[in-house]
Image: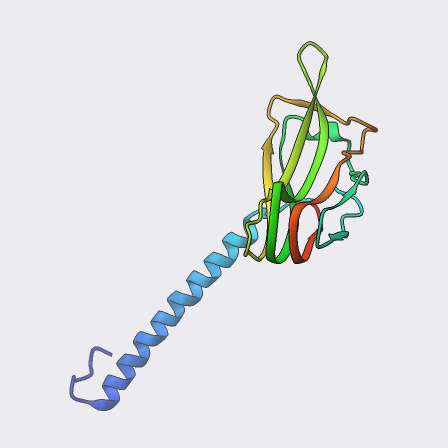
Length: 178
């Protein structure tokens, strides 16, 4: 309030309230802008893996393989960028050996220019360390631009699966592949 005199308490309080109100409006506009930006983003994506609500848990080596069927043919991922992810949870790693890792892997064929095929492995892996605990989603993104893919098996079957390998720990699990 510009007509206020600097010594008038009521005027000073009114000026302070006006300033706070202006800051609040600025904050609310920024919050609205951030919300609009988040809503406009395409975060994540569609999960093409069928029956993906599954968990593999063990305190030693384990595997859950052969079930990786998809809602689209593997060839539909040719010339695309895709991400494979899996939830990994474990506590108190007491030992690791060899190629210790936990995660998921799928397999496909890369069609070569001469018509032959080359096996391609796509995995999302986490490599634990003794004494470590971890709870989070692990992912890997693959750029197949210019690459033709096809299934090793039937058109909608990746093969492979989820693995716990070379880890001794408590509460070890891998779950929810996407």
